[in-house]
Figure 1 (spheres, rainbow, N blue to C red):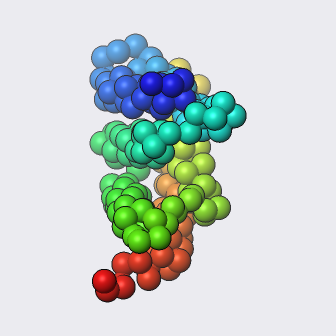
Figure 2 (cartoon, rainbow, N blue to C red):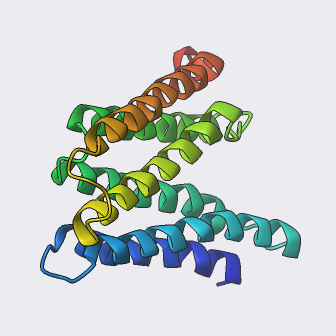
Figure 3 (cartoon, helix red, strand yellow):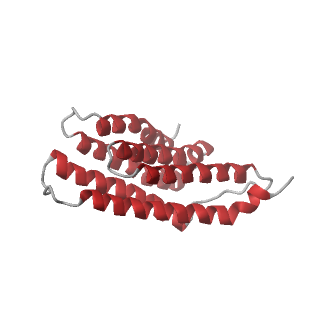
Length: 191
């Protein structure tokens, strides 16, 4: 297994540790540890693809694992946040459903006669950046509120969380709609 694929796999392996720190309240500075894991895992997402292209190590395994690792990491983080009541569950459901829909669409496209590869578009990249950024910002807010008590009690952290997650949800719906519009013909044609 090459280095980029190892980095991608490390992102998947990091997820259970992230979840434990997010949901185990008895661990000192648990949110801080969870955020550190999330940031490191997110950085591997930026590094593995660049390394694979630069070193000529792009593999089918990497093409399969990379988006899967992203979805596992982000979905796990969003589910933890919903469990902690940091965001609304319906927003998390919309975001995760979009991931299933686009993944399914990619499978259909790859299996089509012309073997269409659906690359991430600008809206998908914006959605991913906004979601990962929002997870980091919201978690940091709770670190400063609950672990360090830096923010005052009246700080509108939940309002900020709701706004950030609303932006992520809107970007999710837009990007998912664009994917469906652009590739709907693959789903409706007959053989």
